[in-house]
Length: 178
Image 1 (cartoon, one colour):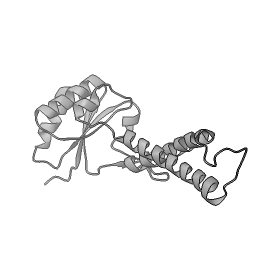
Image 2 (cartoon, rainbow, N blue to C red):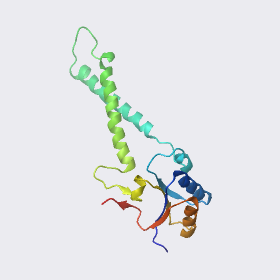
Image 3 (cartoon, helix red, strand yellow):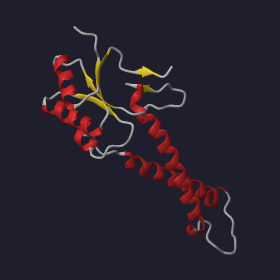
Image 4 (cartoon, rainbow, N blue to C red):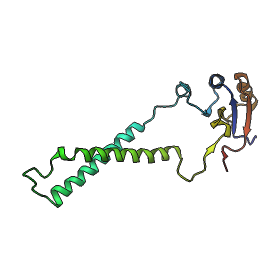
């Protein structure tokens, strides 16, 4: 059994890379991931990536911020220290709309930052993990999981037929910048 874990197909042209994805999918070869130095229109649909649920998380964080500031203002002005200022009610909503808006935005911003770091495993201080260092510069990379039953030569030939400039067999999953 081979020790190869990942087969990388390096492409110069995004159209060739898209053809490589098509070739692999026609032959039912699972693609681990695709790395590009720039966004490519339509690659999410071709790879079958689901829509993000980050909008739901943002809404929940906004609701949490609104609830927290509403609770603080209500407790402070009605429960803990009620005051009669000009005969107005203790909890006049129009006076607190700016506070509520700002806290909603604050909780949403910080919550989404932490959610992004948790979802992508990009915590501060963690060394970045990339398949090929050129993927952030000028190459388009298709990473194929090589642990399946498909012969490695077939995968290499499919990538070469699509226009791969280089095909590498990695024993490790990631290359570190260190």
